Image (cartoon, rainbow, N blue to C red; front, side):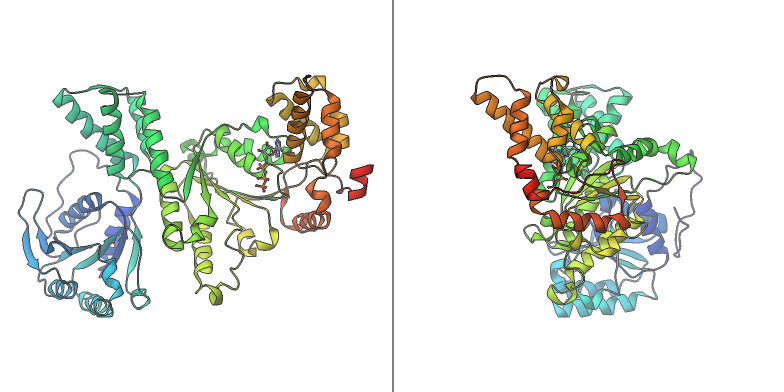
Length: 535
Ligand SMILES: Nc1ncnc2c1ncn2[C@@H]1O[C@H](COP(=O)(O)OP(=O)(O)OP(=O)(O)O)[C@@H](O)[C@H]1O
């Protein structure tokens, strides 16, 4: 932690043992306080946790700590055992005036102050306070779960997102819980070091209160805290994340072996798998950023996103871009910030941004049509993609090339941009084999070459559909699935690429100069409708 900057700061005590490293967020906050930033906006749901951080910070800097809330007014908080002292009223403008008069260097936290920022008088008072505090050692922090800054204050306030609790904080919480449980002798704790690590890993992405609730629930369930509770905590986390309405945990049930073709993409992935973690960092490798998968509908983009997560044994979070913009759950900008914070809290993780082009299509015209919201969100997303340091591997998928803003394709956003084309004949053969195999049939009993030849222009999804409809036919005929059923199903299918031939050719042309092919096998030209139906 930094040296105290204000008069009356206590001399730093000689440490008994090496202090644990300061989390980057606390370091940043510390820097702003030392740099005498008058107004800071802290975005967090976790009041108790932020209170503890600020208490430490105030102590380190030899400053007094004040808190204001509309219910309790402005109070000077004592040290951990000290008494609180009332200083000012509940009225926000009066409280700000009281802050200005504080004679000692202080940290002042205003809790849930954001609704008052809709009042022009309060906005003015905050602005004047900011000016007045510039020559003092006092910093005011607005602590709120949502970010709401009126334009008048945008240049006056620095914003810090409080990240989700670190492994160290969760470990500390778990230790405290274990101590209480052991002392109370009401439950049994049976955790090895590895079990505890897995339990903490499972709780990553939860707030401290949510994690505490999850651990408490696990104990209440059977009077034990043991390795079996990892699943319970994970389940709790799934529910908490789903409640946000933006992110969703996806089960890790697809393997790369279930993806036919895409040899280049698979080769790329096999080389990056080990690039998470410390040995790779020590070797000098950067954290893998992510992939943009563009391509024809139904050719395995989503399937690949799922398979990457299971291949690398990482959790998979799916972010719905549509919901970010839908207005159903909070403001769009707030939504993106929240989703990013949760994903970073769960990291290492694969974050699948499905249909990234959804909602971004109007970026260029956004200034006029929606007050610039789309453009701002897009900007925030790009900055995050470019600068993120947390191990969040982004797999963004998109179908509609015309809706993709060119900035997204620039270097530095993703490690690679792959184009997933319609599968070539050899790939269709593999995909037929995969889907027959997944439905309990022996691929070698089918003439896969012939099926591949008959299905030119099919997407992977259409190959799968042909197998499924052949199964229906066989089932109706009360016989087992035979080659003829599949051939018939193929011949009865008019692939989407045929009906949208020009569109597919246009996408291919576009992709040729901007992306890397996901497959080394060149797909054939899409057959014309007449050839497929009667050829
Ligand atoms: N290369 C492939 N190998 C095996 N199965 C495939 C392949 N491509 C597609 N499929 C099958 O088709 C289904 C749908 O594909 P998927 O959803 O991954 O396509 P997509 O490219 O994401 O399509 P969309 O753009 O419509 O979301 C998959 O669940 C899978 O069963």
